[in-house]
Image (tube, rainbow, N blue to C red; front, top):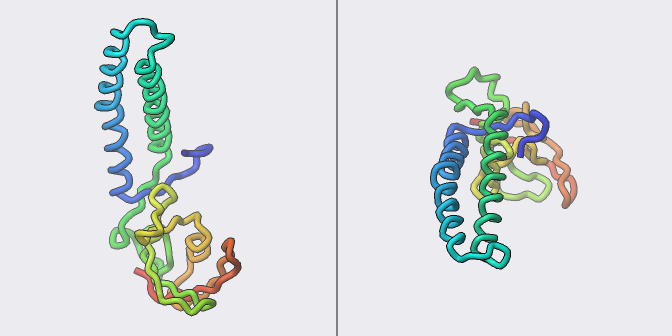
Amino acid sequence: MARNNKTIFVTADGLKQMEEELKFLQETRRAEIAAKLKRSLEFGDLSENAEYQEAKEEQALVEARIAELEEQLKHVELIEEKGERIQLHDVIQIGSTVTLQNITEHDDPETYTIVGSMEADPLNGKISNESPIGSAILDKKKGDVVKVKVPAGVFEYKILQVK
């Protein structure tokens, strides 16, 4: 949820997903719920009508999600593809793909794309610019070593590659 005009960084794909979800909720889910409400009214007494109560609750959830998406879309800033923006000598920015190695634990290198918090999905190689690692490596470049404080302790990461 957008908080006090906070910018929400998204890729073109992320923006498209948000817009598609909003359109689906507005055009399809609203109509489905309206039909469900109409059918449930046929069952009579609304005070004991579980179908009606369920449809009203579903309607409230859908309307809340629509409002949330509309608010988020007001604060979206599109992350430009790496090739579309001026490079700052391979400085890590939102949209950069970075290969890191945890040198404290001597782990194998891992590659991540830095995205806005709305699109973060660490299991699929997308970390938020607001995450401990993401925020620590912003504005850094290949060869830099950064210390990252996470719940498990403090780790050092070496930046092996920036794309």
